Image (tube, rainbow, N blue to C red; front, side, top):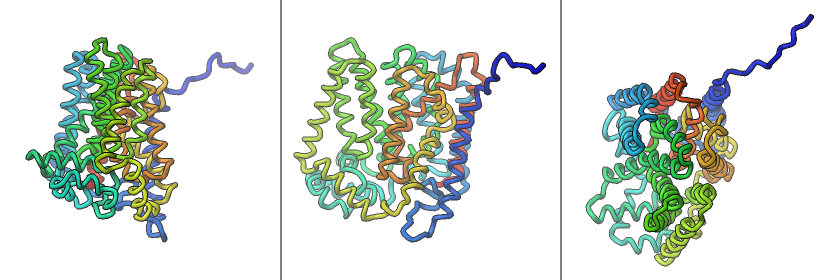
Amino acid sequence: MPRHPTAARRAPDWLLPVGAVVLVGAGVLLLVSWAQEIRGRDGVVLLTGAEPFVGHWDLRVGMGTVVAAGVVAVVAAFGPRLATTLRWGALLAAAGGTALAFTVALGAATSWAGLTDPVRSRHEYLPVVPDAAADPAGFVAAFTAQVGDYPIHVRGHPPGFVVLLAGMDRVGLGGAGWAAALMIVAGTSAVVAVAVTLRRLGGDAGETTARRALPAVVLAPAALWVATTADAFFAGVLAWGVAALAVASTTSRAWVRWVAAVGAGVLLGACPFLSYGLLHMGVLALVVPWATRRWTPTLVAGAVVVLTVLAWGAAGFWLWDGLAATHGEWGDGSGTGRPYLYFLVADVVLLGVLVGPAGTGGLTRVARLDRTSRALVLVAVASALLGALSGFERGEVERIWLPLACWVAPAAAALVDAPRRVAGWRWWIAAQGLATLVIGVVVRSPW
């Protein structure tokens, strides 16, 4: 008589998350091979030789690498326990400090110059700062008309970041060192801002998500591009703008509500004048009123955003004119020569690389997250997909996706079933850090 099984055999719990990580790894290898096949074809413009990454294949190990490896070991060994036992304020301080140390170690892998050399590039913002500092009003008023005369990254962005650097220069904080410090500190602080938002919007469940996610978020490969790129600063501004709105929408104190709402408007209003990409990424802010059902703080912040747009327009820079001018420069340059399908796949795969094995694996279990954390993760993913599908963001997303990666990486919390599963969670944290170290050792990035 044939046997009839009484229950279907369940697949191992780790199979789907590990499968997703393998898929991202296979995607990277596919893109490497694909780039070799199409390189040199008429009309095809790729990046710098290490596709899908921007940079070059170059084996590099230094003292910074050793320090970063030590950080990985400490976080993997003690992170799960500290994340669940430290008081909330102490945990945020520890996470922010660890993220800063890890990022600086990675950026200074072989020398301290690794932190400032990217900022000194002729393609970056600093070459324009002296003229902008001499006449900020004239720079803003003439920006759209003269956009073709500026370095590549200035051409591809609104004038806000140059104006900020010019202001710093005028008060004695000019130069590559101060600019790099601004980018790195703001970029690493996004880790804290995201955790604050998760707790504010999700209550106890959101705090649990944040606590479980923090060790993996700190070690995510995105840290490799926080030191040093302006998009790290953009990530910090957007993250703190959303966090301020979350505070305004959940506090019971009226004066805090108004101050936080106005602060959120200032930060979110600055975003479109730092990067045009933040226009679609800013949809993250709408998760706040959706989650809290309180629209007044969002309306206040929105009014400040509108006033910011009008103020820039009065100064001579209208956002839509700048966007049109930049799109024209992109079309006349190498943008349209980048194969759409190749970079569509590359952009999606590199988002998985940025959030690391834990973030990628966690996306397969995103339904396990609390309601608001799940919404933030999914909106961030959707925003990245929108940018990839638009065809306007073709490649270079290691930096472009930084303002989104910090919101996707908390999906890693979905891999933690219960405190008793600490051993398995340590393996995921170790994999997260190891992936970051490997990429940092084999890819030399211009940022």
